[in-house]
Image 1 (spheres, helix red, strand yellow):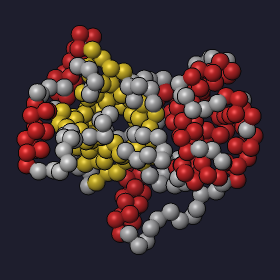
Image 2 (image 1 turned 90 degrees about the horizontal axis):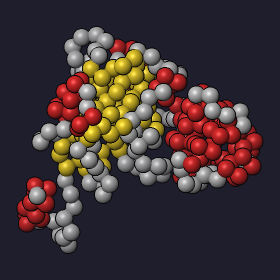
Image 3 (image 1 turned 180 degrees about the horizontal axis):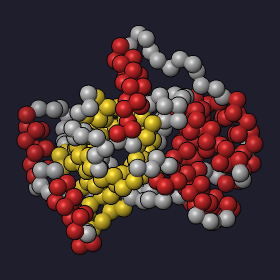
Length: 293
């Protein structure tokens, strides 16, 4: 069962060097959704549970209970083959696209950002509005340079205990962008955060806006606050935390400030799809009425 730790590290290594999840899935003969569940949920949950002292067998059973598309029998029966194929797969030396200047610029900005991220590295707790209840949503983020120091790696733990890994881009010491895919591969659903960077070193708080899709795949935007809780960039420290929805009557005095900043009228912007065969001015009127009711 120790192979699971090695498999997790190898997938992390390949992802950090630009190998796509679909490439890894194809090479290891796994369905993309199964590989995504292993990487995003099963393996990190297993590792974290073992570190807390739970026996490995019990920890694996618990990790697998969090998903519904990974078979323990099939996983353990193919674990040696999976490990062998993962370690056979080597990342390409060149992942840039010289023909697309925008992609080239993003690659350059990712490398530049990795040199500047020391000012903001650490573990944060974010606060924003819950889309499902009148609650404050608290979710941990880990921001750090990647192992190869070639891009900014950001890890997010949702209030529903799923893990997302994305990238960060810093621009002119004034703003930062954090981007994730919040759905399972191969489905793409960008979750983007824009942060304003204060004009001093080592800030303990960042604020901005984040844009994502709601459960009906309609775009929404909300305020968000990042509060630094540690300078550590250790994944073990990050995994000790958890996201949660905090009801209004359970807020601490500090959390109430974040609630008042992020969860009031005007702090939540969304659109919706009006069931109409064509989009016209009347549909705009209907949409605004739906959202205001």
